[in-house]
Amino acid sequence: MRRLLPLLIALTLQISVPASRYDYNELDRLIAQRTQTTEAKERRIDSIRQQLADPHLQPEQRLDICKKLYSEYECFRFDSAAVYADRVLHYARQLNDSRKVQEALLQKAHIHSLAGFFFLSKHILDDIRPETLDSNLRLRYYHECYVFSELLSEYCRGTSLHDEYVKKAQRYLELMLALAPKDSFLYIINKATEL
Image (tube, rainbow, N blue to C red; front, side, top):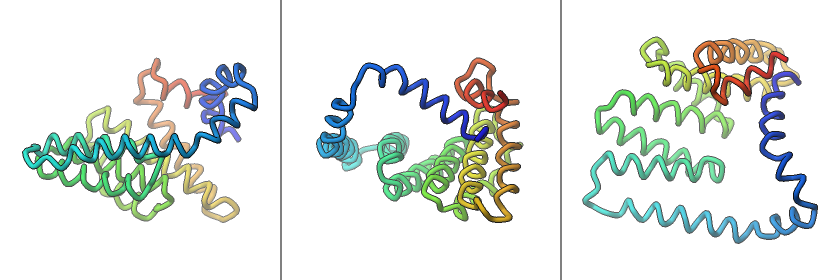
């Protein structure tokens, strides 16, 4: 339960105030608009995707568009997000920009963890050497390792591996907190687990 506390606090902070203003009729109305919301999201994605058709785009521009598409798909369709994570990695390599390559690899690891493709995520994370990363990327790396371990621990609940991944998640949480600025949202929300 303590491990879920940051998530509960974040949800409470984001939901409790607005939720007190709405009644169940408003919630029902929003659910009924699911189709319209999905269609609007798809139109936004199509608009961004059409930008890629321009044959005069430079790799940097293509990378930026693919990052936008990844972001749009991340919580919408995992398989499409994974496709754009691959494209971001492709353009980062084409640019021969090691920082952008590392960011793209962390993005790929993230979407694979969320989708439950733990083997793929682990393979990516194992290939990254955190000591070669700057402090911001190292923080992201530890965060992705934490997400991976936390999700895998839940997947392994009831097995002998559960406790092992809980310990790994805790270790990555400690490494994250040691690097994160004390006034950052990441630090504050994760520090709450110690309460």
